[in-house]
Image (cartoon, rainbow, N blue to C red):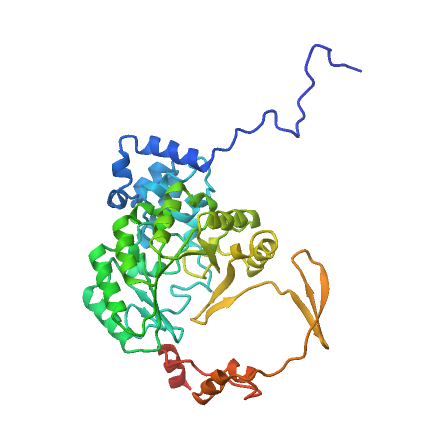
Amino acid sequence: MSSVPANEPPAANPILPSAAPPPRKSPLEIYKANRARLYPNITDEQWNDWKWQQKNRVTTLEQVVELFSIDEFTAARLGDIAELYRTAITPYYLCLIDFDNPLDPLRVQSVPAVDEMLNPGELDWDPLNEEGDSPVTGIVHRYPDRCLFLVTSYCPLYCRYCTRKRKWVDEDGTTGARRIEKMIEYVAAHPEIRDVIVSGGDPLSLSLNYLEKILAGLRAIPHVEIIRFGSRVPVFLPQRIDNELTSLLEKYHPIWINTHFNHPHEITPESAAACDRLLRAGIPVNNQAVLLRGVNDCPYTMRELVQGLMKIRVRPYYLYLCDSVMGAEHFRTSVGEGIEIIEFLRGHTSGLAVPQFVMDAPGGGGKVPLMPNYILGNYGDSVVYRNFEGVIGRYDDVPRKPHQCVDCEDRESANERGIARLLNRTADRFEPTAVRDTPTAIKIKQRE
């Protein structure tokens, strides 16, 4: 039997690594190193100029191939993607990417991939049927009391999972002044619209003058109570949120902004400062994340994201199921994975940090909440429930009594329909009817 000499080290265990992996760099270290490497001669004044950021975006396949050292075979396949879908990445966001990690979650969101050619039969150019609910070009009027107001197809950065990828192909740039006038005329002619969501593209990429024309036109309509912006500018172009922009926005209060952080690494000193400037101008900031395969489909990543948002005073509002849009199949997750994440967050972080998980129903059905079920059953006067730990308990309920409410009587006389009639005990059942005559509803009636 052979033996190992006493002066020789024992043989390395083949199962264990011979050396510890190098320490992972922090997002801030990655950012500083990338900026020094990619933009060594750019001053802080230039870097913090949002116009410089827009002018120097990565927009060509050649730039992408060179930056990310993409091989010739993959580059050739990406050529088909480049012909169909635009690419744009701001220098700021580019420097947040870990170039040593091909699966970096920020890279996955912003850099074209051959997976964008995966298009199973259920995918659609317009999965939410926005065009079907568009009575006037630029308006999407799906819900009775609010509408989308699409003012541009331009974005400083084109997210690879975008539900409006079709706009990258069909349209180019800012909506014309005459079309904006017609959109404002539509809102003015519909007094039921109290909430207008200005979106695009990214509306905060517009010039201040053009933005003010839109805001002034909407604010002049008496029944428009709230103006909301859907914008990812605080995330990939935080330099745009400057004092000039916030001074303009606060002239037209109440203004709300829904932004779009998807991963904790997007929460940086710059993006936090941008959100802070909005908040100091009296503009509440909510977050609408999208559940994305390989980006944030991990409960721990999502918890880090929502807790990070809370620290910069941005409220986690929605977590969207990724839409079944052309070119985004590789980002989609199952409904169950999203529900598991919500299950994890409930009880393991602040209730205020738990977003509502929703699906935007295909074909224009609107938002459908997708939440865990904590009520296991109703038995006589008792409710059997479970909590976030899985503990099952009983709650002794009280008998239900119809409420007496003058407001409800007034609304009933005004032909209030649907669930309200069931709750008011004025009907035992109802059959759904269209809330309004959308173009889609009119077509269905015509077919019938």
